[in-house]
Image (cartoon, rainbow, N blue to C red; front, side, top):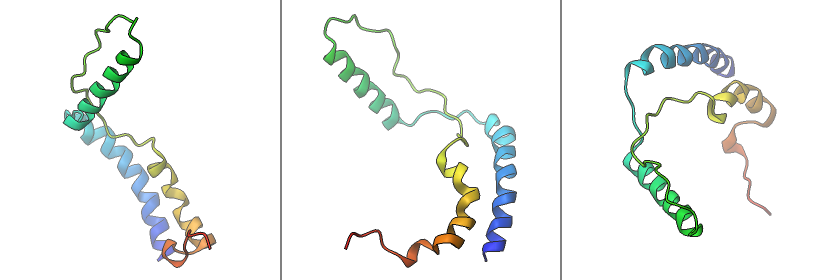
Length: 98
């Protein structure tokens, strides 16, 4: 199973880069409404904490979003097999303090 997983992960990386370059660029994706609301709330909080500053003209409209492959989730995929070999599967131990 681990050899199969290792092989699949090695195929998955180039396929994800190809998907990101070829397919994702064909679609216009935007921030979700809750992301825009969170940005507005954060921006308002900053304005409230600095009353002497003049209001900025920064718009809190939806921004374009792209699939980001430069995240720890994607970066560490290549380490899964060696980590499982070193420590075992994650269901076989507990992080609870004794």
